[in-house]
Amino acid sequence: YIEKTMNVKISCTGSGWASAAFSGKADPDEMIRKYDDILESVLKAGAKGVILDVRRLEGRISKVDMHFLITAMSGFRDNCVKVALLEKDGRGGNFNNRLIINTAYNRNIEFEVFREEREAEKWLSG
View 1 (tube, rainbow, N blue to C red):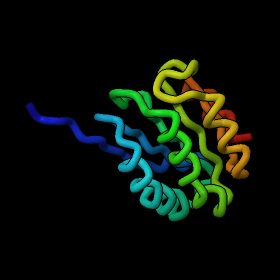
View 2: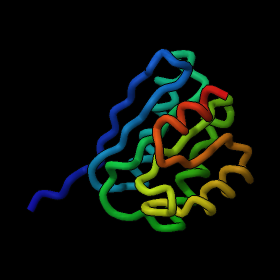
View 3: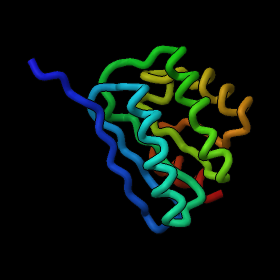
């Protein structure tokens, strides 16, 4: 039995935002470790936002881990980078939307959860 690991593919669209697509086994600690790489790519591209696409993650993330995932986004806030989270079903799936939106709001992180990529792109463009 080989345990799958979590992967992330970072790309810059040239549309004013970057994208980080996560896949494999959900690992909150690894996600947080990837934030620096994602933020560095966003800033190098001169992007003002990022789409964190977690639709291909396997497994669930606890409410406590969700809290730490958002709290660790301070670098995005400090650099005025908007964060759009693409989630599987838009109703909670891996992430409890109300909890993470409130956590982000309380930390002054410009953050929203979406189910459709077009919606996320429209929000990032606004």
